[in-house]
Image (tube, rainbow, N blue to C red; front, side, top):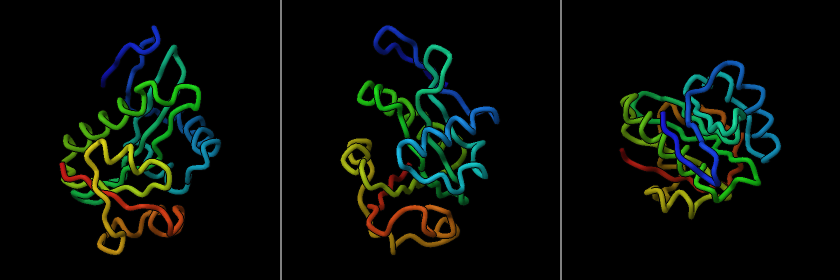
Length: 152
């Protein structure tokens, strides 16, 4: 999908393969992020690969023309290196290509980051339709999580 040079090492953003699932789940667990529902939507995830190993991931759950951005994670030692931005940009591009017109996310820690990426805070009670049956909306994310959206 895309790549860049960071700290002398090339970072490749690519679609996931089945063999990536256990590693991504372990990264999410280590970061304290929800793992529920990941495996059933894993074909719409992207990973960041550096020097042959996965150093980040991001997911998309599709609900018609609405998408749920979830499970954005970057290895702790590589945060603030641009990898997260590459993952988000890759997911935005893939979402547009898939016919998604609106992305929703829930976050407890990255509200300002996603605001810089063009997301706006909304009331989670304003979200309706099939997306509300996702694992994140039915309990994987705490009620205190901030709900955000971006129109594509």
